[in-house]
Image (cartoon, rainbow, N blue to C red):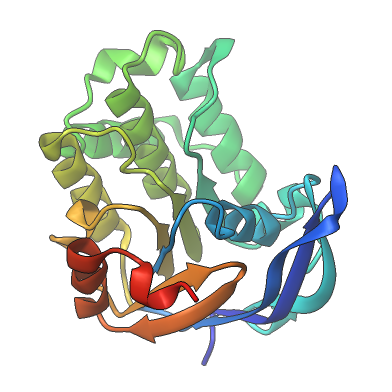
Length: 247
């Protein structure tokens, strides 16, 4: 069974339609798996994540994206989220005037359409914030305003845990983090992970992978996956770079 099935995906940028970015990309992820995308700058890693989430910056010219067998190619972003896809961002946004608690409650309700049990919700948020070494006082602060880079990334993982999606796409969530924060983010991924959901990690570093059981690593070069393997492939990249994969 495939949770995510990407077939022959080709994309162009909305503002530069003469340039093809993804060039016939294929990727399958089964429930219970953690997959990793690595590749040199400009290879199309973030484009892949944004295309799955139907960003208006990219246009699919060929191919399809399926979630649980349902075609979600070009579906509106909010509908993709409601079907169980979550994406963290390289540079999380700040939202003045909206508290972290308000954001989480609204996001949860938008996904589930269920009335929030305030006690259960508060208990769950406090539990996960403790796991992520986040100060509980942050729930009343404006969303990401005044947060350090590390706290913003932890907040992304907190959202993933609260929303509990089928598929979590983490786009360089480890970028700019120190060793302790990377371990905390890895712990958050482990708390989320089960045999029914899946994770797609986009990263330049192998640090975030050290405390996770990685099922597959894919090397993305010039819009195509040119090599796939187990977790040892990430170590090869760390030691030798991408030279052997770039033609």
